[in-house]
Image (cartoon, rainbow, N blue to C red; front, side, top):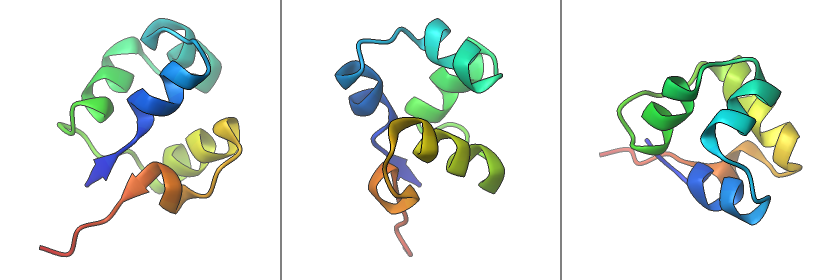
Length: 65
């Protein structure tokens, strides 16, 4: 699943570490999600979307392929 996490993080001028602390996850988790190596749980995806005040579909792009 593709995502725009890095874009939204940059728009809010946050480091991976800062975002991780705000979300209650590790920096490695944020890094893995940004690089597409890890898909977050539904709960974490919604938490991220709420943090950036966007819909989940704006942050994560589901490709049916």
